[in-house]
Image (cartoon, rainbow, N blue to C red; front, side, top):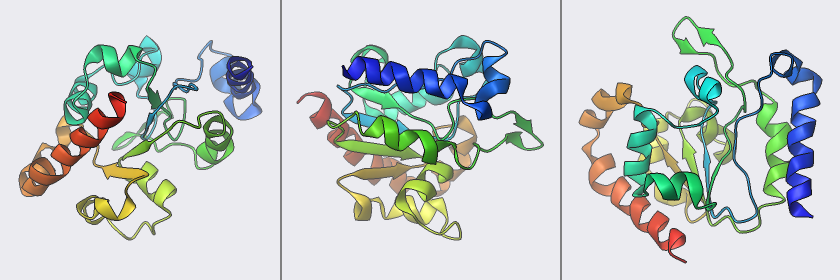
Length: 196
């Protein structure tokens, strides 16, 4: 029954008028949700490459994310324990300074419906500012560095992190506590849940 419910939501996303431009081009929503998901990753939106390949996090950022989590390729894509629910399930387009932000109300419409079907989630990893501010209900004036620095305030349900993009190399160099303190705790928690 649950599988049918997931399929029903997938179809509703496809036929929703707000996604008509994508559906008419044969573009399907890109996310992974399932009853067995125990760790849910919420980030910004699929990139153009991910949407074209129908495979999320299949790039240098994804490689770094898996390293940060301490999981293998097979665990990430095939265990069924890791969900991927971006703030928008479609590539939002190119802007003057990179990808456009996810559409404002997309996650509000679809995430709750999917989360109701995933009762086994033990940890939600919030990647980047869009997901973090949305899920932690924190004012946008509070910068992501401050939020991540105090990540323990949001445990055990949420674990906010910066985006694993190589463009964040300078940020990581300026904030060595992230590598020294935050990532070991993240890996420990992820491994405990994956091995349960």
